[in-house]
Image (tube, rainbow, N blue to C red):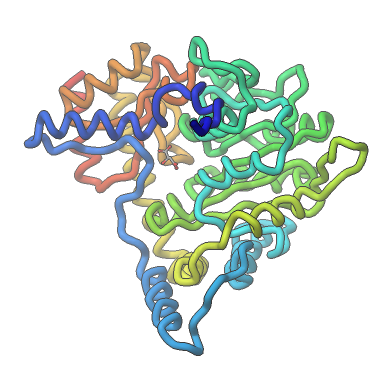
Length: 406
Ligand code: MLT
């Protein structure tokens, strides 16, 4: 009989959001009349902005003619989108970036997992705790961990985010090769200051380590002094890869478009005393295993950067951030300590109780879906995450129901 990848046997249960989806399905089957309000998985609820839809339609029309038709596109993304990203997301903020350092993809989740392909199996990996579970699970799948016990995988270094450190773990005193950082953070909504990011860049340079910086929620930053990109920190171009997404920014969770930036300066060891370019390795991986994002979707993503697209996207983000303020304010008023929701669509609430029980309680007694903190790691126990992605009236009703149930 064919053998399975043995590392999958180490994975604990199902993927967090699949477990939640199963619980919701079972609840809805038992309570078909309950109007469930979902503030769990961070999925946007507003339709795509008109400039994005128009660009997608126009590109679809082009595809319908022999002259406008495009077959296989460049695996790295079309030049028009790579150039728009380099200009508007980086150079306009004073950050050096060339279009060919941007690799367009179908998702930040996919890229963060796929990136492990180009790194050795025996590297020391550090993940924050709490953390977006994809970073952990993909390391397990690729054989970079031992077994699971007491909420943790052997072989991974866990960098603890606590109320005391503002959920921004500092660099450790020991060596790591690969460090995952996500700011604004999923799940805690915390942001890192310039000084905190500088400490991580200094650590990575000293240890010749790589930072995988997930900036999927960058567009939600409101505070003027919070860095939007790791490349705003001097020296980051030689030690950090940055991943971003159009999902939460522009409502592309269903249409799929994201990008990963790999600066050409980053060098990796070939294990035999020579160095190779990480950019070339990622390019090699993408051109072998990936066939690019479809032309209409890339044209739609490009429209995010037009004046009309920027305006439409900004107003959607503003709307979600007003939801975040409402959630924050109601939970604080109900007596809970709260983080996030200021520069992030996630609100991290300390309940002090078993977080799956709290999830079940809100599901059963309020008909509201949130995410249990422990799903993001051991340090998430005693917390819940509430997402601001929903329509205003749903958010207001959810908060009333939650407060009533508590
Ligand atoms: C989340 O809710 O954490 C995210 O939506 C998951 C994702 O982006 O994959």
